[in-house]
Each structure stands twice: as structure tokens, then as C-alpha cells.
Amino acid sequence: MWCDKLGVLVTIMALPVLVRNYQESDHEACRALWRELTEKHREIYQDPKIGGEHPEGYFDKHLAKVGADNIWVAVHGSEVVGLAGLIVEEAEAEIEPIVVSKSYRGKGVGKRLVEEVVSEARKRKIRFLNVEPVARNVEMIRFLYKLGFRTLGNIQLFMCFSDYVWKEGPELFGCKFNY
Image (cartoon, rainbow, N blue to C red; front, side, top):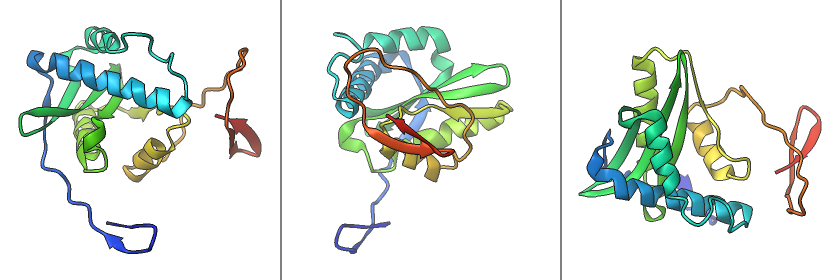
């Protein structure tokens, strides 16, 4: 439940989805989801170059790196509508990626995916589970915060040597940053 701009209480019904392990038959759908993730990043950063001409190929690289046992999909009816992965390194792991098809966002699909990956991490006795949303994806940061990701483990700082335009803010430990 949430309040809209007029303060009217709105109930969002969670979409019934099945979250299951990746299967080879999901390959093209997952490549398409990876493209959607890249398009979201292009939109957030107003940079059409992110991911190159064929960003869906990065799914293939990710699959080869982590293995099919570390990828889950959300299925609504017979359609793959979401994807999440787990990169495991000894007793630590990272959720990467988390992507839900644009028309299914805000309907509980991402929550179900993250819950499944968190459950799997607990089963595997992972000591630290992290996730690294891009800095401008404020919506994702808030979503993850609601799901219990409330500890800062790493902060990545960098310098930009191009004419790229950054937004001002946020502030952390009395230091102002661009993002």
C-alpha cells in the first residue's frame, strides 16, 4: 500500500509469479531483459552509449561467469518477466543483476526475485550479501533499503575526465558528491 500524490491510499496487488532457476529455454528472454536493464541505465544517465550496440551479449558473459545454478527468473504465465543472479566468492556474494521487464515493475516481481536470492544465500551460509545499484538509480536504492539492505559496505569514488554532466548530491559524512 502507498499514498498517491493526492494522499489517496492505493493498494498494489502483487502479481502472481513463479520464481525458479534459469533454464536454457530462458536464454533469449534473459538477453532481452539484460537489454532492458541497459536501456534503464541509459535513461538514468542520459547516455545512449552505455552497453554498446549489443548489450544483451553481456548476459551471455554473465551466464558463463556465474553459471546457470546462480540465476533465477520470474515467470508470469509462460513469460519470463524478471531475472536475478548471484555472484558467489567463498563466503561472500553479490546479487547481480536484478531486472524486471518495464511493464511488470512495481508489481512485486523484483521483491520475489530478491527474496529468492536472499533465501538461497542464507542456505549457502553466505556471510555477507551485497548489491551494487548504480548511484543514480534512486528508485532501486529505496527498493533495496525496504528489503533490508541497510549497511554500507563499499563506496566507489571516481574522477571523470570527460565532459559528461553529473547531477549534484548526495551528501555523505559531510562530503558533497555528484552522481
